[in-house]
Length: 299
Image (cartoon, rainbow, N blue to C red; front, top):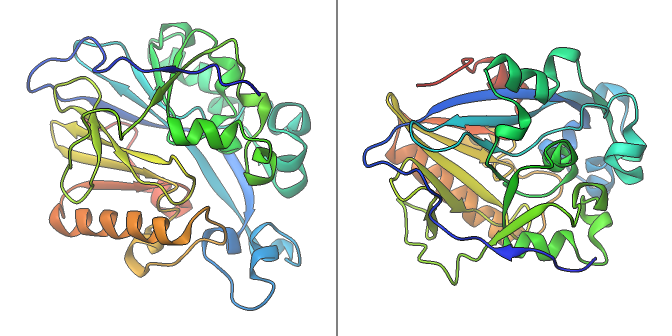
C-alpha cells in the first residue's frame, strides 16, 4: 500500500486559553476475546492462548470497544478512535477482515452504532473535523470507512506499521486504511513535543492545553494516549497502553505486544501519572468493569 499520508499541521484551529472540554465515552460494540489476550497466560502455549487457540469459551470475555467524543468550546468536535464497524456483528469478514473474523466474535447493538450516538448528541458524522487514532488495530479503526469526511491523525510510526507488507499478521486491515481519506501523520521527533508530567513526548493539539497527545509506544510502534482537561480535573485515555485497571495496578502484561520493553516503559509512565495525579480519571482500553463504572459524560 502506498504511503498517502500528509504531515499534520498543528495546532488545530479553535484553541482558547484556559479551555476545558466535555468528554463522552461511547461504546461501539464488544469483542469476544480470550482473557489471555488481556492478561498473559503462563506456559509454553501463552502466545497461542492469547489469540484464542487452545482456549475454551469459558476462557473468553466480552470486552468493550470504545471511542470518545470530545467537545471543545471553540473548536470542532473531536473523536478519539472509531471503534467497530456497525456491521461487525453481522458481516465480520467483510468489514473487519478475515483474520479478525477468524480470531474473534463481535457484537454491535443498534444503540451502539456510532452514527446514531453522534446524532443523539446533536452531531452528524460529517460534522466531525478530526479523529485522533490511538493506533490502527481493527477494533479501533473499524469505523474509519463510516467517517469519509473526517481528517484522521495518526503517529507516523503507526502509519508505517499499518501499511507494511506484514501488517495483517499484526492486527491491521487494509479495509480500514482507505487511501482516498484524509490521513495526517504526527512525528513526535520532528514536532515540538515536550514532556508532559512523566511522559517524555506530548503534543498540545489545540495549543491551549485542553487536549494533549502522549506518545505511549509498545502495544504498537506508534501507539498514543490522550490527556484531556476537564472542568472537574483531568482524564487520561490510556487506550491499549493499558488494557485493564489490573494492567495498571498489578502491572499484568497483555498476551501480545509489539515491543515488551517499550510497553513496560509506557505503562510505568501511566503508573507514575496515576500516583502523581490521584484524582485524575484514567480509562483503560478494554476493561469491562471499568467501562461499566464510567459516567455518560464528564465536564
